[in-house]
Image 1: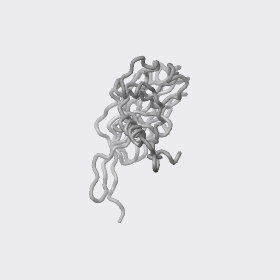
Image 2 (image 1 turned 60 degrees about the vertical axis):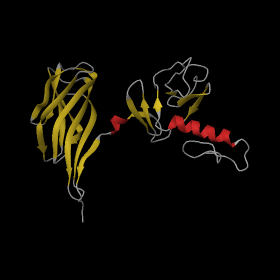
Image 3 (image 1 turned 30 degrees about the vertical axis):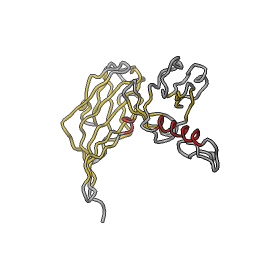
Image 4 (image 1 turned 180 degrees about the vertical axis):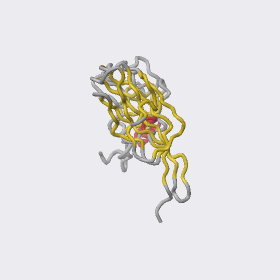
Amino acid sequence: MSNDVTPRLSLPFVAAGQAQKHITVNEALGKLDGLVQLAVHSRTVAAQPASPVDGAMHILPAGATGAAWLDKAAGLLARHVDGVWETLAPSAGWLAWIIDEGLALIHDGENWTPLSSTFKNLTAARSPFFAATRFEILEQEVTLSGASVATSVAIPSRAIVLGVSTRTSVAITGATSYSCGVAGDTGKFGASLGVAKNASNVGVIGPTAYYADTPVVITAAGGSFTGGKVRVSIQVMRFDPPAAV
C-alpha cells in the first residue's frame, strides 16, 4: 500500500506543503461518502447503467459490460461520481446493504456472502459465570448410496433438538422416497420424502434431549439409493456450564 493513502480505505493524504489541498480533501470525503454506511443498488446488474445518479454504487457481477465495467473483476465495487465510474476493492469485514434485494452482505476477503448465512451459532443468553444457552445449526450435504446413509455431523450430546430439515439437492435415483431419522427411529424427522431435486421437508419435533452424539440417518424406501444428494440441517439448542475457576 502506498504511503500516499490510508491502509484500509485508500483515502489520499494531504502532502506537506501541497497546493490546492482542497482537491485531496474532497477526494477523501467523496470516498467516505460512498463507503461509510455502504448501500449498493445491485450486485446482479451486468450492463453499465446509461444514466446513473451521482454517487451510484454497484457490486460488479461476473461478465459485466460497458466501457467502464468491461473486464473488471466480479465483486469489485463500482462507484459513479462526477460523471466517471471508479472501482474500489472491498476488504474482509466490509458490510453492504443491497437495495434491490433488501439483503445485507459481508465480504470475507474473497467473496460477498449474505450476512444471515454466517449466523450458524447464536448465544441467546449468558450468565455472569459464563454459562450460556446457544442455538446452533449443524449441516451436511450427504451423498446417497445403498439402503441408508448416516451423517458424519451428529446431534450433539446434551443438546435439545428442535427439528431436522432436509432438501434434495441432487435428484435421487434407486429409491422412490426416503425417510429422515435416527437409528431405531428412521422416520423421526419425516417419511415418504420427495426424491426430486429441491424437494424439502422441515421435520419439527417436540424438544427432545440427546445424551450421546447421534448421527442423522437417511433411509431409502422402494429400493436402495443408487445416486443423489440430500442437504441435512440439524437445528439444536445447546448449553455451556459455568466457566472454570
